[in-house]
Image (tube, rainbow, N blue to C red; front, top):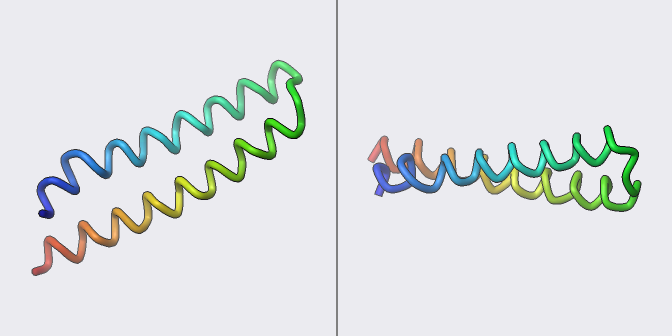
Length: 64
């Protein structure tokens, strides 16, 4: 289980956070909609929470 988490889930979670962060930065640099920036920020925070949970599950599974 730890191998699957560290091989698949963690990179996907971190990649999703990085992608949303990049989209938010591009939106800000282009002078895009403030509401879109706010929605991207909320999505990024949610994805970071999911990435932290996945990291903690991986650490827990590796300790078993």
